[in-house]
Image 1 (cartoon, rainbow, N blue to C red):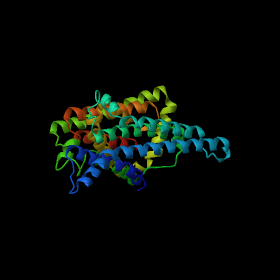
Image 2: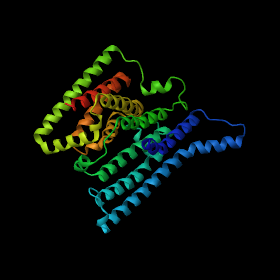
Image 3: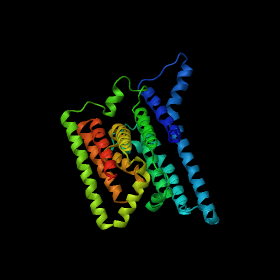
Image 4: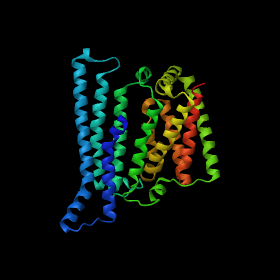
Length: 340
């Protein structure tokens, strides 16, 4: 439940931006001209204000992280095992740079420049918010990685995921995907589902999706074999991390929960909602950086390739169901094989 509460404040700018975009395309009118004018101003500028507030909050987080790092350096006796001042310094730097960079999408000139390479509307409040959120994910994921540290700390961590944890972790992704495409706000009827790519696939596409899942599992085996040969210590450490994080899911029920939760939620958000606006490569990068529990290792490149394959499937079929059909069995079977 805590995971849902953490994400709720970030949902507000998305919802407000959708109302603002709805108003831009088809203005709301009230009985009073003055009220209509005030509403117009609110919906026009409130998305900017909310993003600015988040950016200022990140600057505050950067300052607090800096104070925490200084306290740990001045009073090392307070440092718990595995906690280092350098991690808080990294978090401070990441939050500071994220806040500064997140101001850039608020500038129309920047959005117009980005529109040369990304399929965005420079005047869209929703697309502006999406760009800012992309920066948030990149910066805060890197900050979290700096705070957590290397794989050795993750291998010794005591947080073991449960089936409930896995299910709840996917709920915010689904909510953000639905809210991002304007469900019940600016896209009526079946339009949100069409925008997400939830169209019925053909039998050939379904069979191809299952086949691709098998090929990706083979790719996993190849990467593991190469990694074990060139860096057996790092490979064994990653195995310990996976066992520590996902050991509680080493059951048939856990494998099914992990496969369905990640397969549905991640594909709806990344390939369904994000990719048509931010493009294949940037979306794949965001997908990869969302899996930094592996650190910057060979597994990071592996996740990027897998995300790229799912993105190409979305682009080729114009739908996201085939991505789900491939992603879910891939996770299920991979988890079950890890039990052997």
